[in-house]
Length: 302
Image 1 (cartoon, rainbow, N blue to C red):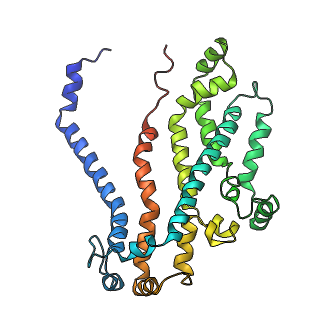
Image 2: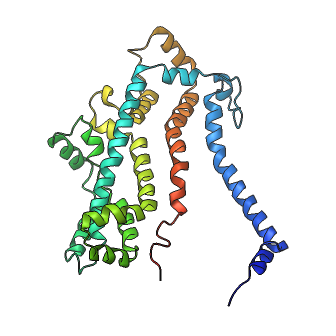
Image 3: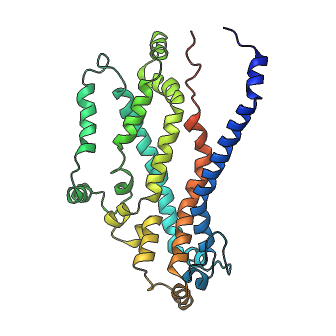
């Protein structure tokens, strides 16, 4: 049955349709506002004076605006050094993890006819999600493989994320097989198929996994605390954690020590959280479009 353009336009102009759209926008706006409140509260607290923060008077607007918390955190060479380590870790970690994820997910997405040992390979990776070796074997593996106190402990050890592999594997499996068959008929090999067809069509899943991996490496502080012997090798999250829990004042000037003890710990924590969250807030809008955009639509016709 053919539906005319006029009937569709009329449907969208009905009173019930307008009420539905209005309710949707109202509800989504309310959810957005509620989700934004904690971030705004943290930002307001980080810019507020010590006495107002201590009294618990800060909610949605800073009082006695001051930059002391940010001055304390940013006016320190150790912070910039830790920031560079975090950037290096995140870039290398995302690159290595995505290479491993793609190279594992692609063969596992094949059928048993194309990959006879697929079932064994899948269970080989799944078993690591069901059973964990424990902290001590994990530490011993890193130490006796020469990765201890190196960047490799932060980027190589967590390189194979089974959850990410399963997500990408299922996404590739859902791609139309006609594309793969057409590529093989045209003489393409597996690497050509993967690089020129599978990866471009899998960009929604890959972008999502890049964001997951980025957040993991940027926010992870425990690995740095466990595998790094010196504070000079701490990534930013580990450095900020040690500053808040066991602050080191041996290398501070008299002015910095005075500023540290005059500041409220909640203000420092708020500034820390905002600084650590800022890269995620900047990156997320650029990757958000891949969450809902289906690049596969229209790739197979008929």
